[in-house]
Image 1 (cartoon, one colour):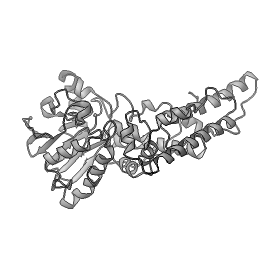
Image 2 (image 1 turned 180 degrees about the vertical axis):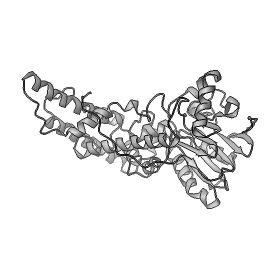
Image 3 (image 1 turned 60 degrees about the vertical axis):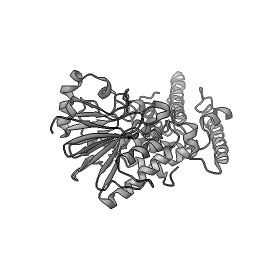
Image 4 (image 1 turned 60 degrees about the horizontal axis):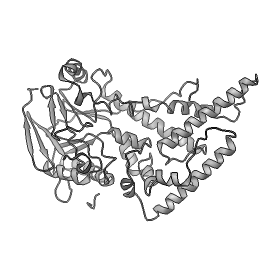
Length: 407
C-alpha cells in the first residue's frame, strides 16, 4: 500500500435551498483525462494514472496542467477503497501547484454509502478502517444498539412489529470489524464524508460533460440543478439521521436498513395511535409525538425515488450503454444542446470487451472498463482529449486512438 495514502398523510417537510454547486469550468481545458469506475482497486487506479503520465512511482502528481476527471464509484466491492480515496484526495491538493486539476464526481456507490447503504461494502473494505480498538468499538456499538432497543420498548409500548430487531449475532454479522468506523469516516463529520459531500455528480470542462451514469436524454434540468438536488438530498438524509440520534431513536452510524426500520416504525406507531383513537371515537393524543420528525420519517421511507437512488436517475441510468443509436440520437442531441456541450463521458456500465467505447460520432464515450480485475476481469482506462485528438491508454499499456467527428 502506498504511504499516501408508511405511510402518513402528512406532507413532507420543506427543504431549505442549498447553495448552487457550479458544474461548469471556466478554465481553458487543455489536456483532459477521464478515468472511470475504481471500486476499491487502488492498484488499478495507480497503474492507469501512471500509464497516463499523471503520477510518478511515488504517486505524486506529474500531470502538469492536465485536468483529471474521475467519474465516480471509487467505493464498494474492492478492498482498498481507503487507499483509492486517499490517492484522489492527495492529487486534488497537489495538481494545482503545477496548474492542473483533479475533479472527482460522485457515483451511485458513493451516494449509497453516504446515506448508509452498505450492501456492497465488504468486510475487507470495513477492515481497512478498523483501528486497534475495533473490537471494543464493535462491542460498544452492540451495547448502544441494545440500549436503543430497550428504550424504544419503553417509549413505544405495544409496538408491533418492532423498529429494531437484531439479535447480537445478527448485529455482528451486519456490522463487521471497522464497519462502524467506516460509517463514521463517511459521515458528515468524517474526513472522507466531508470530502465526498463537496463533490458534484456532474462536471463540465470546456464543451465536455462528465457524469457517472449520465442523466437520461429527456432531462430538462441544468447540470447545476442536478448537482444542487443531489446535495440537498444528501443533506436531508444527514439532518434526518441527526434528528433520530438526538431523539434517542438511532445511532448516527446505523446502516440504512436500520435507519429505514426506525423511520417506518415511527410512522406505524403514530398511525397506530390515530387508529386506536378513531376506534374509540376520540381524537388521538399526540402530545408526546414529534410530528415534524414523523413527517420526515414518512418521506424518508420513499428515498428510493430520490435522484441519488432512482434506477433511472443520473447516477444509475444505463441507457447510454444499452440503448441503440437510433433511440438515443435525437433526444441526446437535444440534451447536449441544452447543456451547451459537445460530448458526454460516463462510466457505470462495464463494457463487455473491457475497452472504452465511442458512440454517436464521438458525442458519447463509455469508460467503465472493469478496473477491479478480480471481479470484472478488466483493467483501468484513461480517456484523453487533447486538442482535436482523442485517445485511450490502459493500465496494462495498451493504447487506442479514436477518430471523432470534428467539434
